[in-house]
Length: 346
Ligand SMILES: [Zn+2]
Image 1: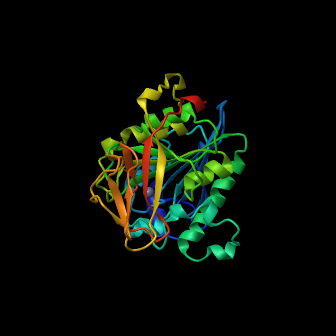
Image 2: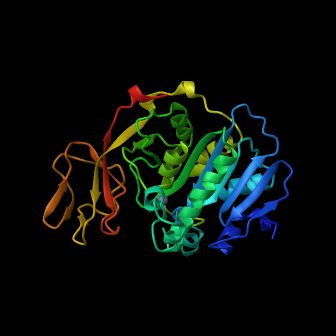
Image 3: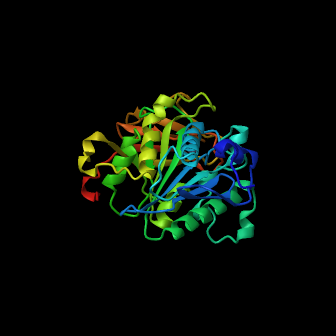
């Protein structure tokens, strides 16, 4: 095969859940290569930007998070049909096509817990315990190949998600741990123009896709939560218009004005506590519809396990990503507090 029927890469991806033989498309302006199912590479034939970026846009790391999948497919179709302009080499990734097809977060294992650390030291064969592990290893390789092709470019990666719950801040971004390096004003401005002003600044390594590209490839990388999970066709596109417009500007070389950066326009939060579920007695004390970033008061109980109460240490300590249904030994809740980053910005 050397065509994408109807210029609909998502449908082609969904028809080939686990693999697709690589092929190249004929295209006037760009080199277009399909590297695998859900993985498509675009590079302008004439790179004439003085400042080259290499941009990874990933979605469907969780298969039921449809809004970013729809946004990316529209942009891919726009590129294939020449209605969207490309300046910077861009790699689009649909992380977990099989889980898109069943409308679930994952099939056997949460893909976003399988990057870097989870695979280090294992031989390739040992990664073959399930299809998500195989996919995570392949996605790492594709990202490596992409950045290797554009060795002098600024590396960026936006991993697009939607969250299980509502959020007091509808959109928010996770800035993976950058080991004490300064936070990027330019990146804050880019992500803000997607409609995101709340940033969760992580303080330790993680097994997420965004931490992988940040840590291994020194990419400016973010997990971006764009709203609440809904099925295909039920997303209110107006809520994602700013995100889509920003992504189109980004790949088209339209730069943001970083001189405008003003920290008072943002909410910066850091992790205060990571609550791990140890056994099946673990319970959250609040209802499923309590939003991410809801603040608690000192002494309030977030969760119980065995006879222990897990409490807020301070007023304003807020919850993020609560999920009592994770496997034992996994994170069931983060608590976060406001933080000041003025002294470590670039
Ligand atoms: Zn997700």
